[in-house]
Each structure stands twice: as structure tokens, then as C-alpha cells.
Image (cartoon, rainbow, N blue to C red; front, side, top):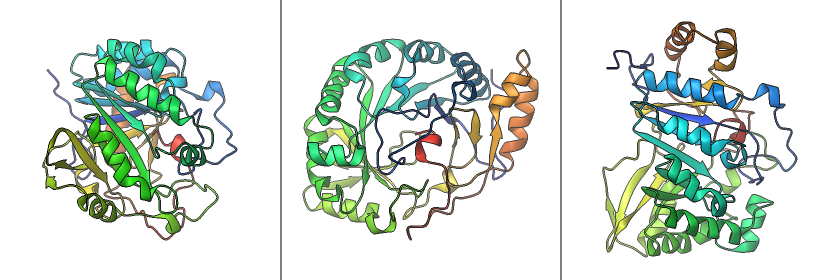
Length: 331
């Protein structure tokens, strides 16, 4: 019986942890990182054993959902074995993963067999040239084949993630919805977050969730839903397509901070208490200083959560408020 829960200074229960297993990625998406990146030295990245230990500590404190992220989590050696170990933790209800889909032809079935229940797969365009322009290095056909492999692998649900940007892919919203509905997949449209200097003004490309919804509503009858996947997305259903949901993640236009139930751990073990603030705790230092005792880690964690910010301060004016890139923030 869990008699301790993670509660922050605003009284919000923390039961969802996003854990990055690497800051490395085989794509260079324009909203996530710069074209030329310097990644962390190996010794600064948490070992698989340290990630597993921290996952166990979180689950022991009432965390019910863990999402493995990156960078791209599937470029980390040993990822399938790590998934199996975390999925087996008593008390964990859901192990899920966010991926760019590039490695799914090879790894979808092993991940499902290891206990990963749901996948979020990034898909920002169905046009090969646009896809390459957004990802800088990605191969659309490889990702589409990965999505097909995931559909065959037996995951509980698969959701497509689309970061919508005017001048890049906003005109593809109807085609992306069609693609998801025809395959019985969920799809979420995400407002771009101002993390890291990616070499352009983000304000020029900002597209709000309300604009995206209005575009979709011209084509489909949308039905508001109270469903939740345990994260920040607000969902609607589509009349005539019972297998799919459309989600909107709106850090700018529909702030979801009051119900925030999550923290993020970076690949170097920095536990970010808020994506849009710099408040954090060095979990890597704690696990390495205390290899056999969890008590000091739990004490530091409980104390740090009392300083979890009440809200983030994102704006859409193109100014970068947080200098770390999204790949360094954990998905």
C-alpha cells in the first residue's frame, strides 16, 4: 500500500513522470533543436540502471504513468530491456513512449511485447519534401512504415502528434486528420513551445488550437469530450469515427497549469518541475551520492516539489524565455 504521494506546493498530486533516456536524436526538427547540436557526454547521461531505479522510486511514491522520451528514445541502446523492467514495476498503471517513428519498423513489436502500452508518434507532414524540411533529416516513408508496424504490433492506443506552424504545415491539418481517422488513430495538434533559440522567430509561425479546431470543424462534426489520457490534451470526438480522438495541446491559448500532474526528468537527471520554468532538482547527483539508500532522494524530492511553479510564462511574441532546447527538456 502506497502511503506517500507526491504533492506539490499548490496541492497538485504528481502521478505522471516523463523520463528522457537520451538527448540524442536522428532528426533535427525545426521546433525542437538547432541544425548543429552538441549533445551530452556519455558520463553526464543517466545509466539505464539509474533510470530504472528512479522509475521505481517514483512509482513507489504513487506515480501511475511513466512516459519515456528523448531526444529520440529508440536510439538509446538497451531501450527495450529498460521498458520491460519499468513496465514490471508493481503499481505502475501505464508505460508509454513518445517517438519520431524512425525505428518502429524494427522495434514496434519488441516494445509492445516489453509492456509499452501506448505510443505517441510525431508526424508533422504527409508531404515528403515538407517532412524533410521540418525534420531536416527525416524520411517520411520510413516513418509511415513505422506507423504501420506499430498498428500491427498490438499497442493499446497510438496517437499522432503534430506541431502546427503557419508557413510550414498548417495547411495540412485536414489531410493529417483524414490520415488518422482512416486508420483509427488518435491525433493531437500542439501549439509550438518557445524553448531554445532555433534560429527564427516563433511568433511568425504560431498557430493556435482554436484556429486548428475551426479548420477541422469545416470538414467534420466535432463532439466535445471529457476524456483524458492523463496529460494536457483536451479531446474531441468525430461523428462517424468512434475509434479516433482529436486532441489539442495549448500551452499558450488554453493554459492547463492548474491541473498539472507531471514533472519531467532530463537525460542528465535534472528533474524539471515545470517545462516553462527553470526550477529543477539534480536527481543524477542524488542517486550517485546515495547508491544504496532512497531516503535522502525522497526527502530532497518532497522538498523540491513544494517549489513547483504555479504556472509557466509562455508567450507567442517570438521571444525565447527558456534557453534549453526541447530535446534537452525530455520530449
